[in-house]
Image 1 (cartoon, helix red, strand yellow):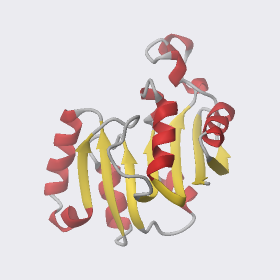
Image 2 (cartoon, rainbow, N blue to C red; image 1 turned 90 degrees about the horizontal axis):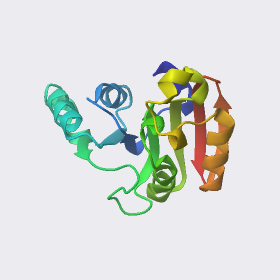
Image 3 (cartoon, rainbow, N blue to C red; image 1 turned 90 degrees about the vertical axis):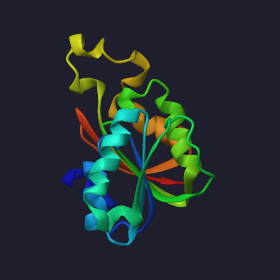
Image 4 (cartoon, rainbow, N blue to C red; image 1 turned 180 degrees about the vertical axis):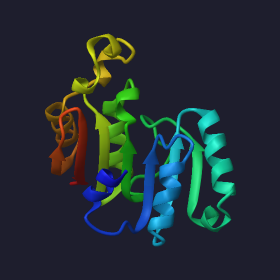
Length: 171
């Protein structure tokens, strides 16, 4: 998460969207680190959402600023221009329709909103492991940058080969 935080280049403020936060540890850590941010975590797996809610309940001070919901990243249930920033940590390669998820993140971000990504590229996975993921969900850094730009993001920073770190801004 420290590498991802390096992409933020300043404190996170306003409303943030966490794609696929799992049991919520990173989202809760961000809420503790950035008290001027409210965070909405959306995960496809109802079991993960339930565990994230239990982890949130154990940190009562964060309850007013953090929420976890079940949802599909490719069809987010929020109005356009809801969030100031969004992030994902190693989630896109699990989403068969990750291009739709990228477009949805752009839709729900306010103009100028930022999207912070940390994900695993095709190069991360040995050939045998690649078979565990839909082929269309594996990408290189160059392909992911192109996909973000095609969806309406300006890519401000992109680094890494096996593990990719990207900072993008909604145009």
